Image (cartoon, rainbow, N blue to C red; front, top):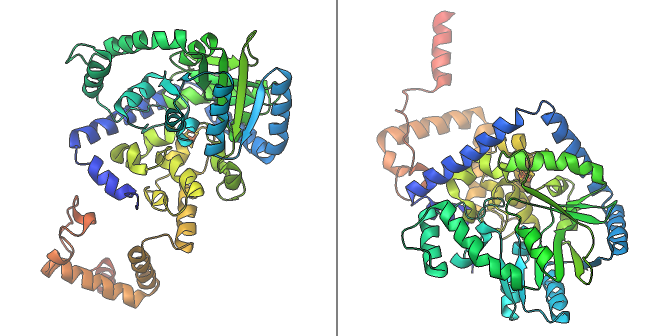
Length: 458
Ligand code: SF4
């Protein structure tokens, strides 16, 4: 069955006008906070350049740093696993749990496990998984998926969360106070932390030099899970590496400032070795990353540190919502990553952009996001994945724009149609017109006006 494309899904999201306005305003507010905080750092551009260069260097020597990381992590007492795709990753997690006779696992936020559909797989294999990040927990109770990489349930209103907690956690009906609901979630998670024997975390940065990983959270839930469990599993994409510990300072300074405007994440936790009598596993996941590394025009997308700033600033994302992107990672960066995984299914995503360049301007690791979106469009057209009607329309337009005579004739025809038969274009079948009002049609084109007036002035 064909997946509904971005335009169709956006139309559904746009039916709830209040939600769209509030979604747009909230994310723009977060973008504003980011602007305010970065202006307090005079060396901000220097930090962006340095971060971008460290990532470029690491990606160019990824084979070397991956092996260094594996060697050092193993020497620390960690078991390192390699997974070529999501299925292999999920199988490794299941085997670790089975070997330890564990059927309950607490999980802190990890977009990679969303990408691998881990929860669903484990549930099918009779393993109970509880998400401990507040946003992820809300989505788990709602049987929903994240719409943003940093603010996973940004598409939900607090009243909806209040109702959800009333139904699942027994909070009083009608109470949507965020502080009260957060306290209720903490309370309900307490037993999970105390009783579950396995904890899975994501990885924000992995340091090749020391074999340690760094996990950034605002809630401390990763630390709670790991310290109380016997088995810690950390899932990371192979692009999360940085060469040395000294480089971490650059990334920690740009990550949360770009994400939420905070000076630093509340908890930046380092995990290096298992506690006495415990196990620590790190799973290095490829899942299409080496393929993207081999695409010269798109390899820079692997520099992404998942701050979400490109989403917060994107006018299309803010007004279409994350679920419109039908991919785990939404927004501008998701639209570059998704066609690499399945070009046919995600052929619409690089077109879900105005190419205004705001995403590239805010990206803390200087990914040329809007250029890559433009380049994907060309690849997708060449591969034949674009709607044939759109392709023909573009070819006709290219011919008209290349010929002054055709261009003049087309302009005249368009003015006549808009003046005497506007219903030909302004009707319910033309989605472009639905939210637009055209200006009054001029009597002549600018070219004609110029010709006439130049003659008058000669
Ligand atoms: S592409 Fe850049 S701005 Fe977007 S999430 Fe990644 S690091 Fe942040």
